Length: 393
Image 1 (cartoon, rainbow, N blue to C red):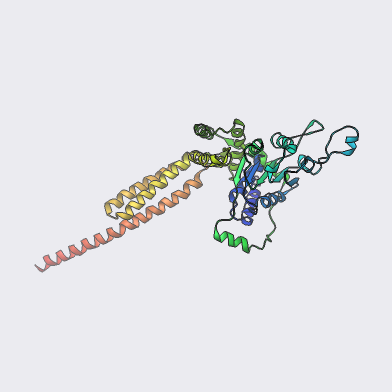
Image 2 (spheres, rainbow, N blue to C red; image 1 turned 180 degrees about the horizontal axis):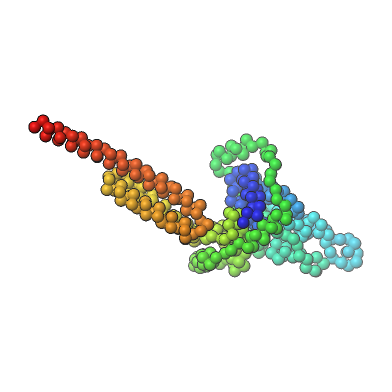
């Protein structure tokens, strides 16, 4: 499973080190290019939206990259290339697409919702179908992923709903919140050591690995439950959106060095299944409710019970309560040992809680051993005093 996946780890770490409080966006960008999907980042200017896209593109050696700032007056020539004058003289309406959007792998479009009707249809076709019509003939384009950015959401009635729908992943980006991160950003000289890279061939290889990641029935069933609950709320993502989302789940699993999608991977769908801004919160609640697989649910339950037992013994340190608490902790430890045998490949997660519960168990033992020691000491003292009385008699 390794297959040089360490390159992805290195790129992810390097981007996180360079861009403060952008961990979710960094991972989402990697997921987007691995799954060949498109991602939209919405937020105010100066939040590193374009810088992130540019930096990632530069890390992929051999990838063809195109970026453009759209305005209300943008023309088709800017995105798709000028008309060929030689061909035009022959009555052929053909564009010279060299170095333009129809000939690249990665695209960054800033102020995406400034797109006007003159370019909208061709833009939609390239993004969705990976086809560009040149002189009326369909040409397959090598596009892998489009990163769109905007300072604001499109307004209703502007005819941009279809364009908004083309972006499977949608992230809101804001200014740095944590004070220490803000200070680190201010002190950062902007000169970083050499960034890690991968080749376009590496990326294609990773995309093929992504396609082979297994999705089991438990995940499909969880997605169906999410869909049903969204429908109950009047939120109806298209069948196409659900289908495309599977590749995103596969990419998320691959980044975590797994060849199987877990139910926990579904959490990323909170950024994919809403259609309007007022749906974001309810979609997030529903997705999070179902983004826990059997192991995660069991570990959460064990953690909760262990905390309850530990808190109770800290309030009542009697020997009787301590013995009962110890037995409960031993049962939880036994449950986790049994889980390790049943859920192969999840040992790391189970061991992390197992170590914690054993530590809590030891603290409980320490808490009850001390009063037991003083109890036995007092008994011995009393026995010694009684023995002295009998001796003197």
